Image (cartoon, rainbow, N blue to C red; front, side, top):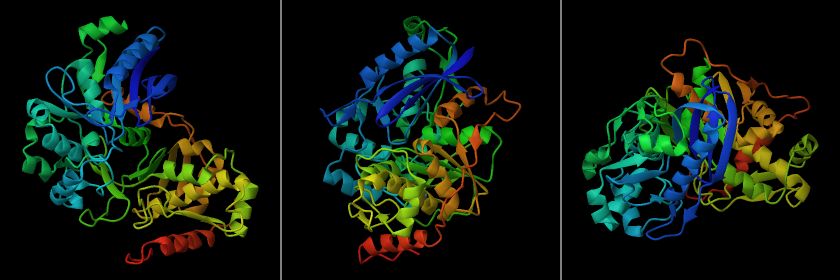
Length: 467
């Protein structure tokens, strides 16, 4: 069986999967994405990761015929490279930057239209990482030849060809204006244009696998290396390739990432949680971004699933609420960072905590959906859909939409693999989705506004109330 090897780089873990060209997952290997404290800053272990990748390709290639390799990754990873390899390590995006760098960055980064996202915490944006490197490691920055988003870094290591790609740069890098489909003005202001390689399509073949790597892995010297893609855009493409449109896709994990193909958003107006990404054709995709996985973990604590429909009913009857936000990020509700709390008679009941976390995640998802132009179809994907009640609660909260739940364990890997046949596909790729079971789901029409009122009460007094 011919397969595509998909290297998916997450913040905490990495996966290497063999996937059919039609998007069916065959086998997956996984490992932690190790981080070192320094020097020169907290960073990912690129050398160890490369060895794991090459060993994994040899392992998978011993059982499957790998005809192409494609990488996908989160949007906050990038590598400054020179002729020989990394000029500096890959920054852990949760690493803080020096105050003087942060102050300068906020002064020069530009409008929301230029950024496509809020200015988030830590070193979350590739442009901010570049400014830090330029200011604090000028020699390394001066000899660099390119700054590559994570998917394109791995494509470069495998093929030797450097490229930029629209979905990766549009994913809150602040190097690209997704609304206008061009490099941001910050790139010209800082004179960084020479570090941005030519733009290529996510599905473009950059070249064959380097001969020494073909020998190292046992793969064919003709194995194609694709340019690569941002993970959420890959997940969205999975459903585009399946023939869906008028669509919103909710990817769930560390982040809740919502993307839609609907238009009508004012990109000159910055609003909490809003972002703008791009699909593989470079078209702007309005979106929402909030750290739902971290919020879920804070509410669930040590509790484990499954969620209980009976407890959902008790939570609603007793008006027990999880109110945002528990993490260091305001998310959808400015002024609420680290102020999250549990309220109501079941707030201290350990048996209710996991179910309360699922209900809270569904409320966050519905809030994201309410803030974007309404799409006819909503697809839920990722870690949260392993809990059946999550999809049912989202459907109950947005009854006017058609909610579908992905039955695939790896939508990102499937979407990335489908790129290998992008130019030759003649029919819609098969989809595995289902409608949530609403049997017994209680009425949430009073609970949802009560939750919003509670969130509004938590916010700093100087901020506008939530409407």
